[in-house]
Length: 283
Length: 280
Image 1 (cartoon, chains in turn orange, cyan):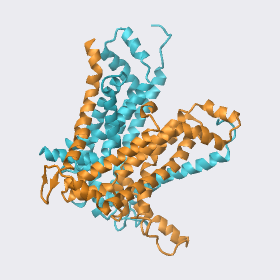
Image 2 (image 1 turned 30 degrees about the vertical axis):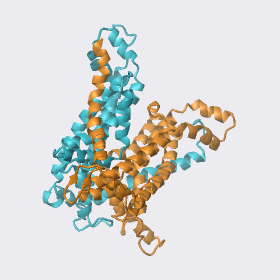
Image 3 (image 1 turned 60 degrees about the vertical axis):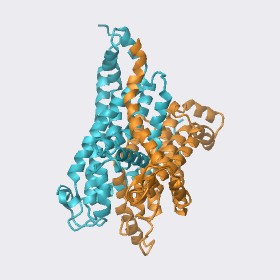
């Protein structure tokens, strides 16, 4: 029986080792290096606060963090406004289980394809000579191509919504499928209107799904750099890009300090959202 | 609640849903069409003739960097990550059915691995290898970085699966004299096979398309997403779309294989059904 008691530890060991080696130790390395010194050619083990001072007293940092938080907030609102109705339709209006599965799959398949390709795919649509501009010119809605469509903040947000709306749909759908249908019937019998049922029954019961979706969307956007780089055409900034720039100048301690600040911000945000939901209960 | 007439709400929501699907697939379909652009065609419509020239271009290495090499690396990495993700997640899933010392810590490590921005993981692993004076390589540091991304998904799926899995099957097997290994091999794995395929699908595709965590961990040889990202800055011909079409096609193929496997297993189960009550 000794072995039986040891079994869980042996079973969970490989996974734990991966997380320790490729998550915990690297993060600790970042924290350590953030206190190191550097010059143009190397990094020097030390304990200095200059990296944090330079970071936190620079107006560029604050502007970039502001931009990133704003992107995250806008994307969060839009993905929620898009994701909720989509999940609602799938959960409550599609009647046959087969259709539900099929439509759910239709929504999830793009998640399994390349993000970079999905971003590129907006070029023929939004570009200066793209489909949208051509159509609008043809219809004489505009007489010059709209420049803000591609390589702009608009394009960045559009790409975020395109890439990550799904992260909102899936957990909300999951929450909705667990709502006991008799609750809704009871609400209707008690005279609740459709809107009242939505507001007082469905939305409160979907809170965990909304919270999980929000955690996904917000954390991904806050750490993003690829989308901002590709879709803004280098005109917009993000914290991730700022780190990448420091890395390419071999200023590793500066990048590390920035990483620590971002990590704290992300963890605080997630902690706030976790108050709404016990993730383990939701699986 | 859904019996009876469809109301206005249904049609509005159905319309919204269709728009959402169009939004998801519309842009993707334009690049598939444009990848068949004629030899003198550009990155946008109109189509300037029709050709497969850009696909041919893809296989002439000098044109677009190292497409074949990066493709092979991504495939090898994806398959290895898939295998390891399935095995490690399954084992951990078994462990988490009981409370054990430190289970909370492991769980929060997994959640942390999911929510810590990918660029931090990438940066951290890159820095760690640099300090240890090890070279980063797609099959060492890159492999670990990918696992840090796929394993949380695998573990969460296994939680969901085991929450719905009745221990009665195992008890029955045990009562019939099966050893723990036999129980796993002949009872648990066959029942959970569709879910394990699902975990594998996640493992492969997340790795195959992974970008941020690979950036500082892949070393001197690019994986496919890194190669594509590099191309976006210096390639201005539809060869970019051809590559997009090919990789997306491959993703769809993998998803298709997984779905076919699900259906096949489901069908076989229905056909064989249960032999309860038939006697021996």
